Amino acid sequence: MVILTKAFASLQKLSKLGNEPLSFSLTASLFYPRYLHSILNAEWSVDLRHVLMIYETLKSCSCQTGLEIGAYYGTTTCAFVEAAERRPDFSVFVCDVVITDAVRNLVNQSPAVDQITIIECESARALQKLLDLRISIDIAFLDGSHVFYQNAIEAAFLQCLGARTLLLHDTRTQSSDQYGRNYLFDGPKKLLERFRSSPMWFVVEDSDMRCHEQTHRGLALVTRDREVWERTVAIFSELGSLPIADVRKAAGAPG
Image 1 (cartoon, rainbow, N blue to C red):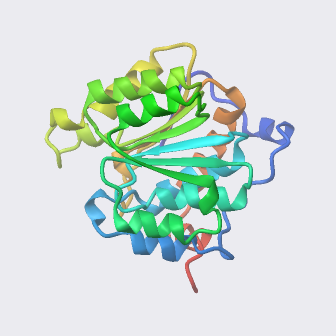
Image 2: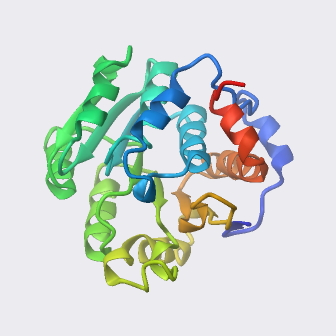
């Protein structure tokens, strides 16, 4: 179930926003083979459904700069790279403590390579560098450290950088039996709770339990922009309701 804060906005309002219709079609891109190539550790890879939700959010919003914290082997980097390829006005920063060869190859082989900057260091240092360079960030995806105090530092930096929209992964992982409420995973859950308690932020979350998927780990968007929120509600709702075969088809899987 998609969980919302504030009153649920009618999806009919989306027609007034002037955005293109939701299509969920990547058949003409390299998205799906790139995604498959990035699954080098399935346990820690972000599910295809959630990666598509991230991509559609990046594609549909008017953000000019995006930041990915925690690229790992590149499953979510696929979403940022695809968005950059579709949007020449979109600049991307990819940050991780160690940038894997899989991520470097994904970026370097993209036609949008000039729009993508790799930052190899821990997140607080990367965010300080961006602040020193007076680079603003419109939207950021947090999936690096999952310890609360580090996530709180990231969120504080991002607000200084002007970020109005954040995507958080593993918002339910700390509560799952698999990780036994380990404090090393408490960050996304606690950070999301902070945003939920504030009247300044709109929140949407997908954490449904689905067969052969790990979407119950949770993906959330928090934003100050009501139009971004309404658009993302539609994206999460539509992609969340698709059978996995249709999700793969939307991602450009053959056959």
